[in-house]
Amino acid sequence: MLLGCIADDFTGATDLANNLVRHGMRVVQTIGVPADGASIDADAVVVALKSRTIEPADAVAQSLAALAWLRAAGAPQIYFKVCSTFDSTDRGNIGPVAEALLAALGGDFAAVCPAFPENQRTVFKGHLFVGDLLLSDSSMRHHPLTPMTDANLVRVLQRQCQGRVALIDHETVRAGAPAIGQRIAALRAAGARFAIVDAIANDDLMTMGRAFAGLPLLVAGSGVAIGLPQNHGLAASAAAARLPGPGGARAIVSGSCSAASNAQVADFLARGGEGFAVDPLRIAAGEDVAAAALDWARARLGERPVLFYATAEPAAVKAVQDRLGVERAGGLVEDTLAAIARGLVAQGVGQLIVAGGETSGACVQALDVAQLRIGPQIDPGVPWCHAASPAAGAAGLHLALKSGNFGTPDFFTKAFAGLA
Image (tube, rainbow, N blue to C red; front, top):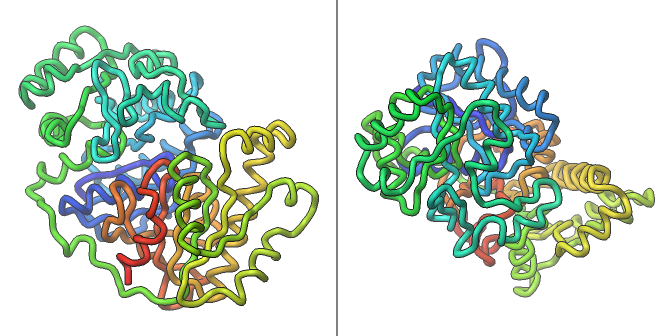
């Protein structure tokens, strides 16, 4: 193993794995920490956790368990994958997990960079931009679980950390890997434990990759990953992304309420696609919405994909949360969508898109998926994967786990076209 990765949600894990595969690494994503002694044939292993919004102490414990397995498997460098919009609150979980991992590794410094320019995430002077907007002016300001109201990542991370957080600015990055190395040495000498690193283009990420080769821990979105395979003499290769041929019916399960997912649901329905709306108030009232959705699906599964969605505009989401509570509303929807996904695969769905990090976590757990082989990219940050699942039989299941914020409006349509 050349690289060991810990991701704080399932879509983020596939996002990271996708970038590693695109640049020549053979990657397996595991759902949770593998069993002790498990052997995985891959250049990189990404351990996917569902730890982004749980209690910080639980997130730390799960992440340390993943670290222990990766170190026992021989990983020489650890990559803690966080969201490209740095989703977290002042309690964490990015800071607490990063500090715990760094301490367990015996390290004294880690670089931090969520930038992914291909997906319109850039960092300049320590400030995170989503497209042309500061993070604090983007739709992430109204995220129901992790509202991001401060774009200054040095401040954001410092509120979560005991150790000092510094900055490596773009002027240093542009000067090259040796300049970054000199800045890291100076920050270490001054007692900094973490540094936010600017990046506005892929060239910056490639430079970082060379500069970060000797660091025991990286804390980053998926973008930094494109610069790491070069450190092991690897380059882009179609063979790294090869999957078995697809089969079975096609379906989409969308629980994300991001602006991107709302646009994707609207685009799919506008093209004449059929969709079943999952209403959390009906679930709360005691209706078996999952059973109703699967009954609806039986007559429709075939050549054309079908959609099951709890995706809604922010005002509608807030109204439901005000009535049911944030945690209850989210839990009801996740459980229902997971039951729908499990039922769809039992009915013959062999190609499944799941939109939303929390939804993806619930669905892959419901399907008893233990590992994913990472395949070709659909959109930046979103690949097709192939998984063994008891519900899918010997042929396995093609899965695409899409972060809510990722993908073009026509994502659902083109994803299936690309797999055919």
